[in-house]
Length: 226
Length: 247
Image (tube, rainbow over all chains, first blue to last red; front, side, top):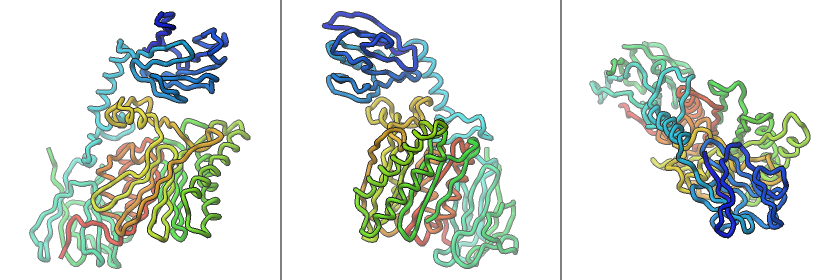
């Protein structure tokens, strides 16, 4: 846990552990750290501690709160910061004891799990954080069947792939955890799947669906990936 | 211009509020504070007050001062409501807004951690600066990036609308270029999606902002949807970027 070392004129007066979420400093007796000196305001400053982080706030004191020589109103405390109130000094020690290492472990765990968020509600564990798409069980592909690019295949590895002729007709195939979907994007003609024209709604693609966009026929299929 | 606000997959209530008006050229988004009572009230009050003030200023081209005054109005309204009703005490909201002026100038203002992004060419830039504890720690060099800061500090703001008698908004001015796509979003989106994914969606679907908005919200929900997700997309692009040209 973070600690404070109170000193005056180089003499250490007291050492305190920041155990409470909010630690108040001031001249009045109700403060957690009471400093009975007229240069200190009744309610001079407060430190809010969350896990291993601490925030110093000046409570509109008459003579001000200084950190490393600079006047502050609000300040995120860093290891070895020196807080000055009048002639008193409070050295902030961000601790490296058991609590901190436990937290580091928690953090490194969170990092390996991806974005640093750990969601129990997520349907499947995901390697987010990179720009990779959510893992679908299968990788979708498009094989172009007609037109100048006939025979070409296109991997649908991104979260979305747009296809078409700009200004004429464009459709998008989106990759989601529960499958691939095709949606009309622009143009007056809508994509055709297995001979049926789509409406504005997203349409789920099944293996070997034949899609027609901008007069070009193509086939959707998916492959299991290791 | 298109907007979409979704409750997400975990939260019971949507505390985000969005507004946009293509004729006036304004878009605004607020993310009410989750932990506090009345977050949805705060977001709505702030947006309404902000839009109300901007409408009055529109006789002349908007200036930086108008945006600051509008944020001050929003702050006053939310703070007064919070003080008047014990059930709403300590409510607050973020606010990010964009004003597209006819002389191809963009004015923005923000308080809190809702962001404004711009996609220009292939480059996605965040035009706003979060007022959050993690961002402050990052700037101070205490953590490498905002995403590997302590989880307990996520979403803690250093500034918000309506929690104190006054608040200072950041205001920026930039120039608009043809082809730019702009995105206003709440942290429900940016916590779920890396910038690369946002850039990809905006680039590919810039020609159809409505679809781009739906897709961003779907993606955020697919990845967990732990918070309300709200987006406003403003695009000057008639066509998206194609993954494959056919024919």
